[in-house]
Amino acid sequence: MSNRRGAPRLLTRTLIATFATSAVVLSVVFVVMTVVVERSVQSNVANNLSVVQQMLSASQAQRSLELLRSAQRLAERPTLKAALDTYTSERRWGRPSPDLLTTLRREAARLARAADAGLVAILDEGGATIASGGALDFEWASGAAGAAAVASGGGERVVAIGDDIARAMIVPLDLNTARIGWLMVAERLDRAFAERIAAQAGTGIAILAGEELRASSLPPATERLLARSWTGAPGLDGTVTLGGETYAHRRILDLDDAVVYALGSIDAVAVPATRDARRALFGLAAFAFLLSAGASVWLARSITRPIDELSVSVQAMAADRDLAVRLSATGSSRELDGFTQAFNALMEALAAADAETRLAYVSAIRGLAATLDARDPYTAGHSERVSLLSAETGRRLGLNEAEIEQLRVGALLHDIGKIGVPDAILQKVGRLTTDEFDTIKTHTTLGARILKTVPFLAVHVPVIELHHERLDGRGYPYGLSGHAIPLVARIVHVADAYDAMTTARAYRGARSTQEAVDELWRCAGSDFDPEAVQALLAALPEIRLPDVPTPADRLRLLSPDPREHLESAAWERTA
Image 1 (cartoon, rainbow, N blue to C red):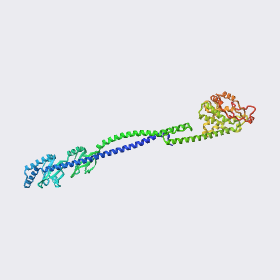
Image 2 (image 1 turned 180 degrees about the horizontal axis):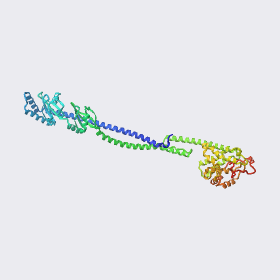
Image 3 (image 1 turned 180 degrees about the vertical axis):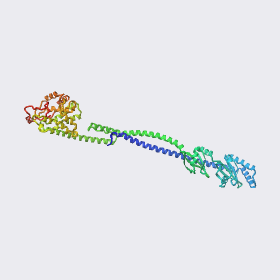
Image 4 (image 1 turned 90 degrees about the horizontal axis):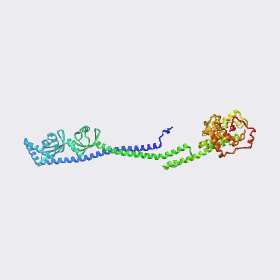
């Protein structure tokens, strides 16, 4: 069995359901939007890096073109060609003079300054260095690098200069269609070069050669992490994680086995942007939550208020047991109005059924009372009259309708226990013995036992069982006194006595109304409740009792001498 005391209200359940649904939807939207923003930021970083890649690639292509033009322009200088041609002729016929080599070195240095290059080298036909000048002159050594570059036909190459690498532009030196040597213009691919490009693009730059990191614009700690991460060629495009931070990389320059990459930190851009986006989303979500909460409260109340009102009305009807009340349509929804109409129709049907039940119930009770009264022609109509007198007395005393109904029905059945009293005793004309009178007195407890077996009649047990109790404690069956006797029993006691005294019995004639009134007042306070006596007498002028049967044969049953009985009050023997 469910515990109704612990069940939540419909308002609470509706509010929880609507707000929880809204909260879940908003939470999902918040998470999805956060993921979308993060991915969008990361995509923007990658796209921006792609733009940077195109810009730097174009810039480096332009730089290569400048180096080529610069080298070609320098190669056409007549002074250089004349000195180199002389050097070549002297070397062919013997050892060139030291002055000529000095002249070539000076010319190389002057060309390096003119080309704004780190190194200008003059090479012979096989690529061996004849003279060189520039900032990198002391690190440059003639050898395999120059020879390999010349052997491949010149052009843009990567050459080793000391421990570093350099980008070199190698062009031929020709005199009158004869090849007399080569001119190399080179710039170092080092950290300074990387930082210069990084300053232009606003990204990190890394230079690899032979799948080894040679230089970068990154902080030293990040550079060390990158050197460990890039143990092989990283490819054209992709990402790499360095110390928990994600970088996107794009290739911007590819020379022989040397590659220059642009790197952009996705987290450096994404984290602040995502944080700002999350703040904006959180503010929007908070507003949406508040709006959802308000809408949920409004929706829950709009749904549950008419139901609550309907529930309160139904509970009030149930508490008052008033089947005549009808519920009013709320107009909040067709369903509730339809329920209200159906409920009112049901109540009308219940009211009609209740009226029929009450009619059958009262008719059955009247039939029981009539059956009882039929056993003794002298008490015919007694129960009906006591019922009427008791109900009117109760109204005078201000009892409510339920108590008056209890009086009316209880009085109809007050002598129901006499069904168990033998006719020989009940209709005896002569003196009753003590045992016979004790038998008559058992009708109160016998009637109570009968009614207790019928649930809807149990409410009337106090009247049936205690209507012969006296205020002074001399009554029966329990000898109760004072207010220990229920008021309804005290009222029926007075009404029963009045009707018994004013109607004829087999052992005596009927007393006059005044004699009965005098007897009631005389015994008020000892036998009868004074307030009940006063209320009955006040109601008598307005009560029209049913005619008391007085057949002629009833008079023949009367004894010429008054019949004695065991009680002091003259009405109690068969009342």
